[in-house]
Every structure is written in C-alpha cells, then in structure tokens.
Amino acid sequence: MFIELLDKFKVADSLIKAFKLKLKQVFFEMTEGIRSQNSQIQNQLTEVNPKITRLEEKYILDKIDDETYSRNITEQKKEDKL
Image 1 (spheres, rainbow, N blue to C red):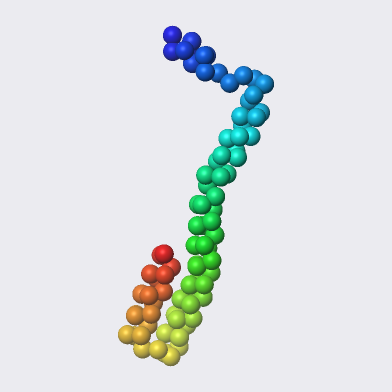
Image 2 (tube, rainbow, N blue to C red; image 1 turned 60 degrees about the vertical axis):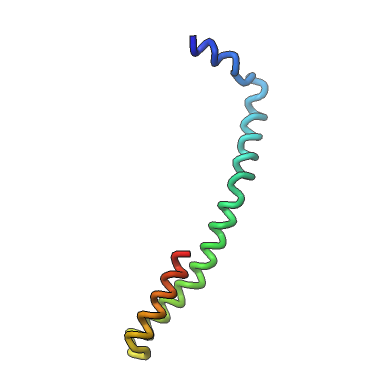
C-alpha cells in the first residue's frame, strides 16, 4: 500500500537527468557560504601558525620570559581557534 502511494510521486525517467542537475546546482548554491567561511579560516590559520612558531622559537632561545610567552601564546591560540 505504501509503495503504491510512493509510485504516484515518481520522477519521470525523462526528467531524471534535469532533476539531478538542478539538485547539484541547489546544493552548490546552499553550500557557497560554507566554502567561503572555510577559505577565510584557512587564511587565518596561515597567518596565525607562523606567529605561534616564531613565538615558540623565541621562548626556546630565551629571547622572551615565561610571562610574555604565556600571555602571547594564549592570545595566538585564541586566534587559532577563531
């Protein structure tokens, strides 16, 4: 009975190709914002990661004290999580 009911809502074979194309188009449009956000996040990571590396190098080489390192690494890690 349920299968018979579903048969009424079947997409005609001649329209399947157009239907798939439209679904892909709608999906692409709906996920554009997500792809844009992902790109922005990747750019931010590209900026933050070298800062963290330089900060760690300075700390290892005793060019900055513990307090300065702790404060700055915390700030950079916060940026990294944004």
